[in-house]
Image 1 (cartoon, rainbow, N blue to C red):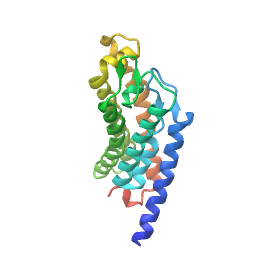
Image 2: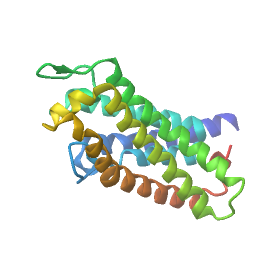
Image 3: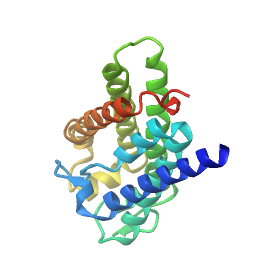
Length: 209
């Protein structure tokens, strides 16, 4: 029985990782947004992993998301802001460092972790499957978006402004705009996906264990 469950877990995980790879390395995973940080669908497999495979699956998928993001920003055609996500890219005198890895990995791993815990906590008090999954996943994803952009501001504020050819004083406004145009839609989409997946897997204990 244990081997069967493990095999099923690994099969589902492999499928989600394959989807994550497709999203990460093809244009299918990006949506138009304002600024250089575009909207992405890469958080979707992480949310599904947290719901279908539990906290372990969510954490693994979050790490995979971070790893693929790191590889894409390091080896794919360069972007002026690649230094935010990889220590191996330089733009003139601006270069990435250890904190690039923090920005690249920590918020992505937190997506899986927070999605699981928000939904698990909300399950105790809310009867509506829609609200406990949609609101839980939306809040979790929004927090992770804010964390990512806050880390960018703290560790690379001046450099990010220079890459955007914008005054540093305008950076908070730019980041706020990014949250509104990218972070909020991504979070809402994540919440809708969470509800859809939870509706299918509502009898699966991984959702709350």
